[in-house]
Amino acid sequence: MFSCQKRTLFFSSLIAAALLMAGLLRAYSPPVHAEYPEAGIPAQSKQTLRLGIVPQQSASRLAAKWGPLAAYLTKKTGIRIQFMTTTNIPTFEACLRDNAFDIAYMNPYHYVVFSEHPGYRALAHQADKKLRGVVVVRKDSAATTINDLTNTAIAFPSPGAFGASVVPRAEMRAKGITFTPSYVKSHDSVYRAVVAGMADAGGGINRTLKSMNQELRDQLRVISHTDAYTPHAIATSKDVPDSIRKALSDALTGIATDAPALLTPLGMTGFTAATDENWNDIRALNLLPEQTGMDKIDTVLCPFD
Image 1 (cartoon, rainbow, N blue to C red):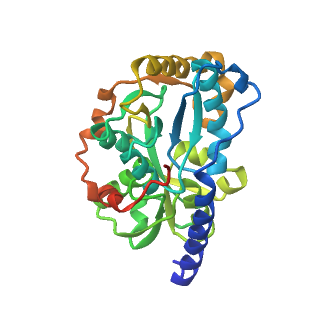
Image 2: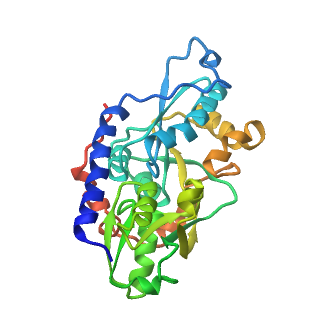
Image 3: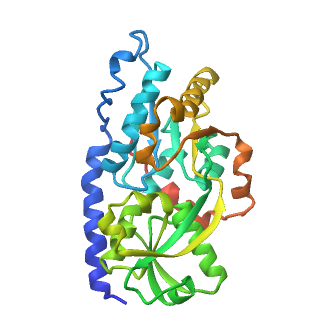
């Protein structure tokens, strides 16, 4: 166990960094990847679609991974696709609530909620993969299963991070494991908090854990995997016309053939077309807003105009 003072200093530094990033993200638009130049956009196309990416990692890491994909979609559809993210998941949820994104990559529970209101429509999800949460500890930790985490401090990205937070918390509570949760903004911050000794364990998902640098991963050990669920959704606002949705769907499902190198940084092999019913396994969990932090999003403002 670690002192409250150390944890307070660590989480304060994370908050300060988030505040600094907040002023940068509103206007951020990554450069178009050289392989997909803006010259490929028809001159008559003045439309820009906002692609919102759930902030599982830092804005710079997400831009490096998703910016080239946004540029690919721009070339393929003839419509400018602008990468966007937020400083944390609750703010991202507020932007989904406010219909701020034309296209969004969101976790499964987000899709269930925001397909109801404001009416996001399923487009695609990661191919050949189910979403499983993981619980990690330092490699030198005495814990070998989640049953060893009773009365410990556990870091999570946010209350509403589905695979990394909602499901691990629910499974531990179902086993009668008591713990003190801390919410540290992103998956990356969870892993760093555990390595730094500011938390006894942390929740994440395999994909983000594997994307961390090898030196950090070597200091962590997975002690639990959650049950498997339909993965994150790529969905469009209800305001996006069917003709554009078709162009986006064709581009996304064609990436594995046309531009597989774009998928490697994302830890994916491709996308498959999806329908609303694909997320009925999430609906069957009958999660309550207070179990996921979604009862508090009315107090959060989306920073985008």
